[in-house]
Length: 466
Ligand SMILES: C[S@@+](CC[C@H](N)C(=O)[O-])C[C@H]1O[C@@H](n2cnc3c(N)ncnc32)[C@H](O)[C@@H]1O
Image 1 (spheres, rainbow, N blue to C red):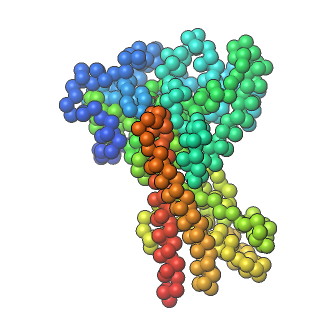
Image 2: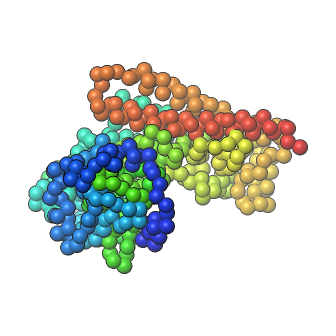
Image 3: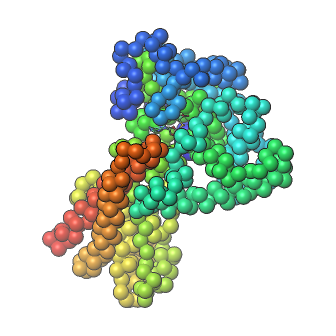
């Protein structure tokens, strides 16, 4: 889901100096040489009547400076006039936005909290799609991307899916599909009971489509979740400082430009600070070099470890995770997020991972009791301090290093296979998805290699410190 902020943040943009975003540059239609009338030529002709329709629904002007056009990434918004940094470029009143409040009451009541906000809005979208031209949102719904244009990993076939088998995104996709299936069973039950005529045979495929549309273009707002027509034609640039803001006083969502645009430039916003893992699963695309990339690693206490139960018990008692370590996927004690470690001598890999490895390396109940005592004497978190015995500290960190080196190996194998599968006769869909797999794996590999480098440096210097 996309992230929204209250308008108070607006000031930040107004004070910010113009900066050039690499993506914005790439998408621009040679902006310098385009006149306003040439910019008109880049318009999406299928959308000419869209804005007048939405402004009629809203009862207000939505934009003076933007128009809908086509980009390499589907529909997009383009500057139709000169825009200066700090200009408000669009305002979409709440009454022109789509929220789960529009669900028929019977359906709404029967969908318990087991169906999340995305699932509820997806149920509404399914009803509206099913209504076709009778839907009051038809002009909007008919301009949404088709299933064949969507590349979230939940739609990947087995062959495509195996390209990312070494990544945590693989497991997370399986979980996401299971979550959607569970929500679908509740939604379809509600449809059968309350809308048997309108939706005769609810299909999982249609719910997955609606769910992914919502997940990739709805904003989390103070009112829950909203589809914001027109604003949701804007594509993502991870470096943009423009985001969708909520103005509760005036009951509208708005966007302020973070830089100057010439007529014909594509106007981009930032959906959030998302890694390629999130972009790929929730939004169906990746960025070639994503500064927010990270890699999820999971470490287990081996089943044959005689101290396994004692270690698990200690983990449950002492929460080893700091708030910062909580990642987008899980927040279980054995899963860790590694971001690229910028310098071999810097802060390094997550403390919670190092603590976990210290615990793993213990070979006697006495050592575990010592860790527990030490935690109680400090802030309660387990194994946060280096072992006084440096060879034990070394051993603990070598466990992580071995794990990371295995992951590096796995990533290298997957990447090699990807390179080998490059063929001229593949479908466009496969080409897009292979590039996404590449972006994901290279980003993760960067993080893993930097962690290995940091660990090697830490291990090599353990005995040289006084
Ligand atoms: C909020 S919508 C943006 C409008 C969308 N292009 C359309 O045709 O309706 C988000 C979707 O746009 C596409 N998208 C946005 N930014 C992108 C980017 N930087 N690279 C590739 N695809 C992008 C992805 O398909 C994503 O799921």
